[in-house]
Amino acid sequence: MKTLVRFLALIALLASLTVAVSAQGDYAEGTEISLLQWSHFVPRYDEWFDGYAADWGEANGVGVTVDHVNFTELFSTLSAEIDAGAGHSIVEVLFSPASFIDGLHDLRDINEAAAEMYGERAGTCAAASYLPVADTWYAYTHGYVPDPGDYDIALWTDAGYPDGPKTYDDLLEGGRAIYEATGIPVGIGMSPELDSRMANRAAIWSFGGSVQDEDENVVLNSEATIAAVEYLAQLQNEAMTDEVFGWTAASNNQGLIAGELSYILNSNSAYRSLQKIDEAAAANIGFTPALEGPAGAYASSHVWQIYVIPKYVEGDELAAAKQFILDHTTNYSEATYYSELYNFPCLASTVPELDGWLEEDPWGSSPPNKFEVLKTVNDWSVHLGFPGVTNPAISQVFAESVIPNMVAQVALGELSAEDAVAAAHERVEEIFNDWRARGLVGGGDM
Image 1 (cartoon, helix red, strand yellow):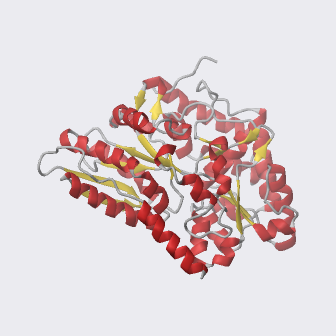
Image 2 (cartoon, rainbow, N blue to C red):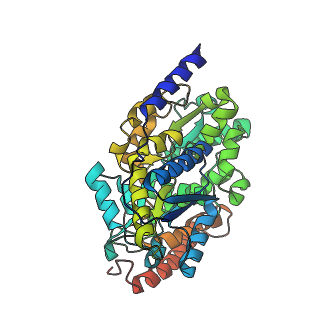
Image 3 (cartoon, one colour):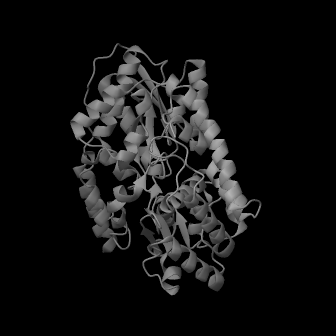
């Protein structure tokens, strides 16, 4: 009976979603656009998107092709296409492409049009698209992905934390107790990969440290950063294994699904995968907001869905590409729904159903309000350049994995926290100075 009720509810929901693919522009015959984007962590989204893109093309008299690649290939492909002066009309990347600004169209027109139509956008989305020092909207960010804590309810309940850890002290104390009792570690990466970069930053921010200040001056070498790094090293030594030094973007997902990790910092993708494999095991996964440290509770968005249009795109191809992006935003209820609530809308008004879906997951979570914690996401989710802007230097620091490498050196006992932070600060200063000399980073007046 429960399955039947869920099925009928799903049919009703699908009937309520409409696809706005009516013709919006008058393009020359033979106009074509092509998109390059990642193979979404939720395959259902790609199935929906490819169908949507085909319908949009038919309605607008535009040929549309969509290519999907692993997310690790996006920036290298974008770089190669900009260098060649030819390639896809629209490229979707998952982190700020500020370092490519010279090869990208300024998309102020569609960013302003979207704001006029749909109102305020999430701050973390604006930060991934706009560079104040150049007054340029070098990208259009349509979605972002919350990065809550995912924890094993049974393990944390046995350790005395039935609602999971709320603070970094809880994570250390509870995670250590679980590890000592069961051999199941915490899973916070310390490797040059996506999830490690995000998790290490979250701790540093929550301890009061940051790569830069709000004026784009490098401030990494601080007592707060050193304290955060010392904490992370202690967490690794007392509640984790050496596997975190070889972490990949799939490691914490795989460990949580296998029941081999007590806590990870990730999107809902690991949970969604487990839900399809074992509903009972999925019901044992809970979510927490960002953990609180001495300076507050902060976590970066897990990724962003960011569209860019290279400068080699011109004429009707450019006009059609821009219209496609705006129309996709108009249909963001479907984007969020078919991503299984992975894609959160940058423009909240485009998905009026979101709060209701968080209260009662349309994809059948147990309990139904498992994702309700994400209603507070804008209180604690920040961007890579916080508390400054996400500029090209911040993007390069991220790409070089300066932060997780710094943390790993301390956890491995290779350097003291003071020496590791000082060395990382020096490298970050070099990166900032290079970009500042090009006029694409502010600050420098300390």
